[in-house]
Image (cartoon, rainbow, N blue to C red; front, side, top):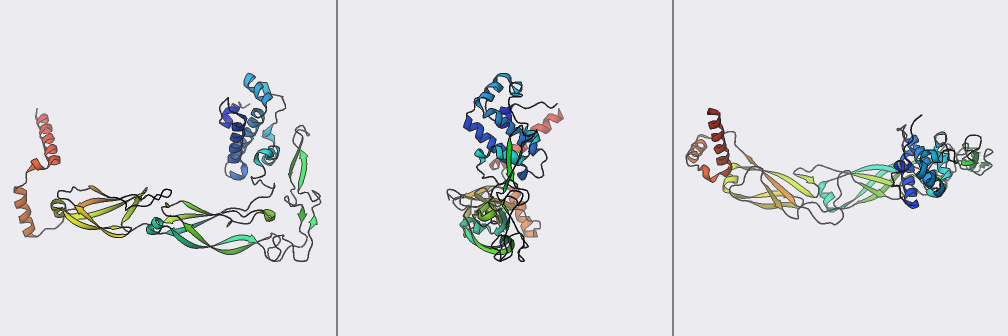
Length: 375
């Protein structure tokens, strides 16, 4: 027989947790592990039922006191339900005061419509300034012929004989009714209370048809690649007139020709010649606002980074801009003319390593290292 986990551990609360904390912890666990949200996770239903059992004990002051004093043995046979043999819908029905019908269970309650997802591609410049984009998509919408009832115009829906039009049925809670009566949605009418006798020709009795929608989506300045903008009420319609779901628009920011985003900073790789690096120069660099002049001082090293303040991306919340970071890449020519080679050799003869601390330090260490090997 498997050993039961500690109830406080199951709900991830301290042993001195208040009743409201336990209630919130159970709600969080139940929503997280509900089978409808974990169709590809066979372990979720077991954790869902484990959380329900833990809550039933810890939410009852007398049962909790006995559990704190004697552990699982203290509540064994004390009216604790065997949740491992109950369905997820039945458990939700028992604790309906916690969830208030807000969670869409299979066959239970009036659920809000399903959320939809879409993608919008924008440029880095549009991400920096914010932009409004038109989005076209299809969704299952209310059939205009039957007004969502699923019944052909002029026909009558009849009361469901299974539930008598109530949309719910009662059944024993397990072990011959030991756990009382549990109310669930009627399996025949799916909680509607009515049955369609003559289906609508347009939607074939479903009450839904595919429709094209066009909406304008406002994308805020500073948004990152992969973030989503929610458009409320543009998802699919809910059951029996309940609210629509939402549309989640995931933003894809196209790659810029010259700039890479790192948080709110932008990185630009700037190639320059070795003479420009040695002598210094002023170069133009690309920014989100066009070109800007960058002063490269004499003696600039390969890989050195210069910061151009305020030329990065705006922060999504504060709007404060980041910086543009320009990394210098010194290019060495692969081919030299005879005159260029002659000039470089003359220059090499005048080199003073004492003014190049990196090179001087390296060769000093190398000389010491080779001398040590000779010993």
